Length: 134
Ligand SMILES: [Zn+2]
Image (cartoon, rainbow, N blue to C red; front, side):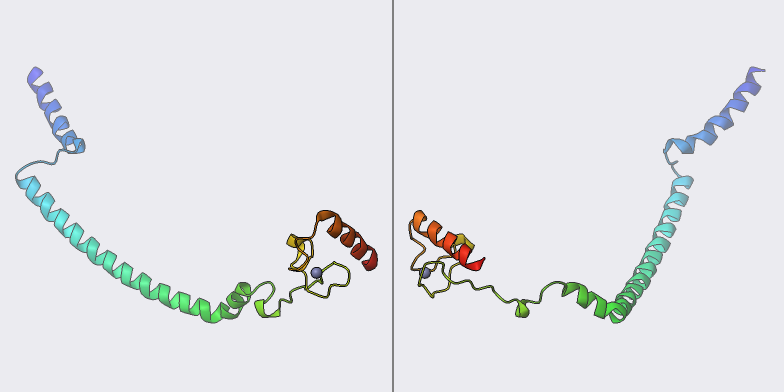
């Protein structure tokens, strides 16, 4: 009986051997290498074919997309105010009797000549200008 048991156990052990990742030596290794080469060759050929196909398709797709949606894409890019049409708001200097253009809110709406005016001066001018606007 022990002999039979050993015989029964042996094939099971052999069958499980390839699963361990240890590829056999000799005849099996040669076949495996052959197979591997064949697989890699056909895979690289397949990848090449897919790559070329995809590239061709993608180029065609992009071209078609641009041709079809070109107008829309252009409009999306041009959304908002066009730079040529932006009109800069020019506000005059708030100093009394001054006709120069102000340098904007950063300089309390004062021109270059008045931008170093003391705060109490431009505060008064500001209130006056505000009253004149109202
Ligand atoms: Zn001024």
